[in-house]
Image 1 (cartoon, rainbow, N blue to C red):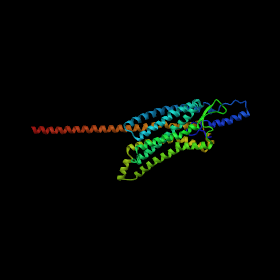
Image 2 (spheres, rainbow, N blue to C red):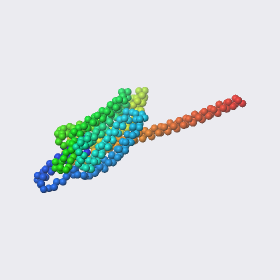
Image 3 (cartoon, rainbow, N blue to C red):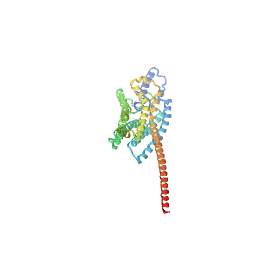
Amino acid sequence: MLEMPNPPLILDKESSIMDSDLLMSTTMMTTTPTINISMPEDMVFNAGHQLSIIVYSILMFISAFGNITVLVLLIKRRLRSPSRLDIMLTHLAIADLMVTFLLMPLEIGWAITVQWTAGDAMCRIMMFFRTFGLYLSSFILVCISVDRFYAVLRPLSMKEYRGKIMIAIAWILSALCSAPQSVIFHVDTHPIFSNFTQCVSFNVLSTSGEFAYNILCLLMMYAVPLLIIVFSYGSIYYEIFQKSRIKNSDRFRRSSINVLGRAKRRTLRMTITIVIVFIVCWTPYYVMVVWFFMDPEEAKKADILLQKSLYLFACTNSCMNPIVYGVFNLKRNKTDRNTFSFNTHYSDSKRKRTQNSRMENFSRESSKTICINI
C-alpha cells in the first residue's frame, strides 16, 4: 500500500505501518513469544513529529496574519469598487484560511498525540476538510487564470455573472472531490497494539481502487488545474507576442492599449506570480507522490524527514499568496502616490503660473487704465 506522511492525496497515514507491523509482530510472537514487542518508531513521538509541530505552528501564524489582512483589504476595496478579480482573490484568501485553521491545527494536534483520539465521526469530518481547502485553492487559481484569459483577450465576452458561476463551480467541485475522504477514512485499532487507534483507510478500497483514487486526486488537485493555467497564460502571452510583431500601425497601437494597459499588466503579473508560487510549492511534493506510484519500494527508502519537509514546503503556499498580493499592492500604492505627488506638484505649478499671469495681466490692464485716466 502506498504510504507517505501527511499527504492530502495518499489515503493512509498509518495503514501500511499497521500492515508491516502486524506481519513483523506475528512472526516474532511465533518464533520468540517471550520477547517484549516495542512500538515502531512511526507509532511513537519522534523527530518528524517535532518538526511538524514547530513548522506548522510558524506557518499557521504567518498564514493567518497575512490572509486575514488581505481579506480585510479586499473586502474594503470591494465596498468601494468591486471587481471580478478582487472577488476571486477574496475566495482564494478564504481557501488559504481554511487550510490555515483546519488543516494546520489538525496536523499539529495529530503530531502531538501521534494516534487518533478524536473518534470516528471527527475522523471523517476532518479528513473531508483536510483536502477541501487544498482543492478550493487550486480551483480558484483556475478561475483567476480563465478570468485573466477573457479579460485580456476577449474582454467583451466576459460577463460579470460568469465569474460568480466559476467561483460557485469551484466550491461545488471541491466538495465533490473531498467527499470520498469522509467515506474512506475511519478509526481503526492496531491488530497488535490494542491501545493504539488511528484514522486510516485500511480495508476500504482494494489495491487497484486505492491506486485509481490517488491518481484521480493527483489529476484534480494538481495536473488538470496546472494544464488549464498553463493554457490560459500561454495563450495570453502568445497573443501579446503576436501583437508585438506588428510594427508602426494603428492596429498595433490600439492592441497595445487594450492588451498591454498598465492596470492589466500589473494584475497579470500578480496572478502569474501567484500561479508560479503554487507550482514551485507543490511540484516537489507531487514529484514524490508520482515516485510512490511508479516505484513504491524505492520511494519508501527516502528519508522520512525529507518526505515530511516536502509536504510542509507545499503548505507554505497558503502563506505566500498574501505576501505576493501585498508586494504588488504596495508597488501599486507607491506608484499611485508618486503619480498623485507629481500631479499635485504639476497642478500647483500650473496654478502658480496662472496666478502670476493673471497678476501680470491685471497690472498691465491697471496701468493702461491709469494711463488712460491720466
